[in-house]
Each structure stands twice: as C-alpha cells, then as structure tokens.
Length: 633
Image (tube, rainbow, N blue to C red; front, top):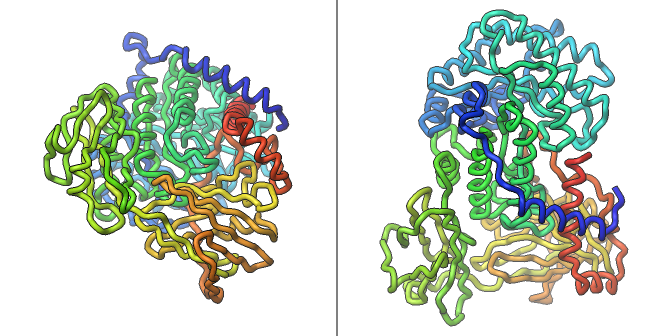
C-alpha cells in the first residue's frame, strides 16, 4: 500500500496516546459463563507440536514417538491442557476413510492425556495448507473430504467426557498469501465451520454439548478476521463455543529484523493492543478465548535468533497479560522447549515464568548480559531491575551468597555490581567469566552473565555465494544484528525496506566454527556491487566489513586487515535453517515492499538527510502504521 510518512507518523502518535490512556479490561468473576470457567481451568496449555501433525509419520519431523511417560511428565510440569495437532488427509484412503490404526493411535494419546487429568483439544492441522487451501478450485471435493474426516472423528469420540474438545481447523486459509482478506475466503471458512458444527452436534452421545473451538481466518487476531468469526459464533447461538487465535508477537521482534532486538515499548504495546482487541470482541461479550499457539517465529529458524533475556521478558509479559484478559495460553512446542527424550526442560526459566504468570508477575532486568572490555579500568556496573511488584531478596555468584554493601548494593530498582566483585570474577579469558543470580520474593531467579570481551576481529576472505562465511574471532562477544547497504547508496539484501537484516535468514553467527555465515537467501537479493556490512554486537561494538559480489563469487574485505584469504568453494554448502511448523500470519507483510523505501538506488546525500532529519521516528511510525493497517484490512 502507498502512504505518506506524515500520515504514518501521525497515526502512530495518536495510537500511542490511546494505548497509554486506555483502562485495563479484565473478566469480572460474577459475569463468568460456564464455558469461561472451563477455559480458565485449562490454564496453562501445551502443544504436542510436530508429531501427529507431521505430513509424514509421527516421527518424520524429528520428534520421538509420543509416550505415556511424556504425557504424564507434561501434566506433572503443571500444564492443565494439551492441544494435539493432527494432520488427517494423508491418513485417509481414496474413499476418505481414516486408517483405523491411526485413529486408534490418536485415541491412545487422548486417553493418556485425560488419565493425566488434562483437558484435551483435538484438531485438524496442516490439512489447511495441504488440501483445504484448494477449496476455491475444488470446492465439492474439499468439502466432502472435510465432512468425511469430522464425521469419523466425531463418531469415534462421541462418548468421551467433555474435557475433550474439538477444534474445527488450525489456521484455515485459502491462499498462499496469509494476509489477503477476500469475501470468498470468509464464506469458505463460514461454510466449513457450520458444517463441522452440524456434523458434531448431530453425531449423538456427548457431542451434543461438547465444547467446540472455532478459529478466525489463519487464526489471526486482525480485527476484520475476528469480526467475521464473531458473526459465525453469534449465528450458532451455542454456549459451548470457544474462539481461538494464535499469537507470535510483534513481527520485527519475533524474527529479529529491522533492528528490533529487545523487548521494547512497541513489542509490549503490540501484546496489549492485540489481547485487548480479542478481549473486547469475544471475552467481554461472553465468548471464551484460547490462544491456541504462542511463541516467537524466529524459533523456527534458530532458537537463539532472539536474545535469551529478551525472550524471557516477552514470555513473562505475554503470559501474565493474557491471564488478565481471561484467555488461556497454550505454548507452541515442536520439540524446542521440552526435551521429549529426557523429559526435561531445555530452558527451565521459561517454564517457571509461564507458571508464575498464573499467580502474579516475575521479576526481570534490563539485560541478562554485562560486558566488560578486556584491559579497561573496572568500575561499578548498574543493572536496572524490573521488580514487577516483587521484592529483591539477594544475589548469588553461582551457589555462593554475596554480601550486600561489599559485593553489590540496591538503589531503588537498580542493582549495582561492585567493581571489587568484578575483580574477583574476571579471569584472563574472554567469554562468560561468572554468572550472577538475582533472587526475588516470587518467580524464577534472573541470571546475569558477566562476560569479558575484546573487539571482535574479522578476516578478509573470498568464497562463493553458496558457502560464504566470514572468519571471525568473536573474543567473547555475541552478535546482535547486521546492517547491509550498497556502498553507492541503497539498502542491500532481502526485505530492502530496512538495512537491518533478519537473523538466521540472512546471516547467522556460528560461534563453534568462528564464522559468520551469510546465507544463500541473502545473496539471492544482492546485485553485483559493493556492499557495506555493519555487525552490531551486544557489547555495543560495531565492526564494519565490505563484500563485493561478482556472479557467484564474493570477496570480503575486513576493515581491520588488508590481506585476503581465498578459499575454494566448499563441496558441502552450509545447511540452511528449516522450520517444520507452518509459517504464521503476521501483522506486517514480510513479502511486501509496498509503501517502503525503494531499495538499491538512494543517493548517499538522501540517506544522510534522512538520518539527520529523524529517520528513527519515521521508520517507527511507518512500522506501526503498516502493522495496524494489516490488522484493519
């Protein structure tokens, strides 16, 4: 879409004012419906992702076979509900009959989950993108297969208790473009939802009143899609209907692009405005809501795409705020979070924060990283805390309790780490020299790594676009983001509305290999020219590097040295990241450059003028306008 910078910036400022002055909205206890109480009893929930929803067999997407021990372990971790995503289409024969052995296998896991005391949501998952997407061209065939599947599922489970619920379809869509809103798409979804409803309700047994879950188009919380789902639910006039949406955060933060590397005010405001909108549309009107999936999109490419402490702050606020709005949240886990072999959390702090959100808030800090440059004079270091209503109870170095006054002090909500403690912690090595743990009256400890570093050093190199890796001595530092612009003007690389490229998609640090990998996807959208790269590190260091692309060859020149290290092309290209979960719709359109700066031809003078004129405000305004416009489309 085309829009003026003035319009985008004005709308951004007005919206910020509205968000700042809006009163919080929560569900009053005396107005809760029976189904609202049902949904709140499901809190919190967990997804058995990338197992039965795999488009191969149960283990084809890398997870082990689901066991009773896994289900019992999830229940023991405090989860009250489990969502079992299932892709049915390839388990049906030419007569649309589901394989009996597969139905029996799903039943086995449903039984284990109910026996563990959990609520169970059973759905139709990747069928949406496999064959239901073709409803426009194969309407009757798609509808017949959809109806056949739900007729069999409903009959098979009709005598099960109402702690088992059915979700009609996961992220329904009818186009490869996740952002299109067409009347016929809403008509198709309405038809599918009504058909699903009538099949289940007429199948007898406990299906007459079983809770049924209906999704918006692509499970998006965009206002037009919520409104259309509301029409369907109102038409059904059934007290046992639950609305569902998915939420993967403010898109730039969720994938680490456009320089949004921290849990900032815009990322927080996106949670608030989205959940308030869903609350006003449904919960406030007596229609309960389950956030069927939440997480961060960057996880599908690299679990480290977003800095760890910023991830924790995001999870803390999201899960707490959802509960304030009476909405149950169900963590999307495709094997990233809970180790299904060893039955332990890969990241216990994330789990503890989710659980604390049921009772109150967890405390965090401005960062979980303190960088000390090697050879610099030591000084006290201040780390602002976000107590969130809790009390600070002390500080540990590993298992050692530290002394207030001697090792640290607390001034208001600022933790002051004494230089004497730093002298004791630091060694002659770069990297993590020690880990501090802030203890609070509630919630998990907040970990702070004390990192000694030196300026990262990059070497010149010549390689092909298939395997271009910059030899890098990280010297204890960690890569935050990367900018790419043409030396003669213009933004380089994919998504050329921003110079800050997407982490793991365009570039990726490989700390164990001492390299920074620029991906094939990055070079696909770089023309033959010189490109200036700026690597931003979490210490605050910025290292410039120049690449010159000519056909399939790239010469990288370090600003820190002159000689070029030439290497023959690798016989095996560095593996590209993959994600098994399907892409999620976002408020920003990652494929569209409409309304964005024209990449590749801007004069240097114009760029300088934009910077001096306040480009930061303009970019923020454009971002917010685009995200709001997508929601309103």
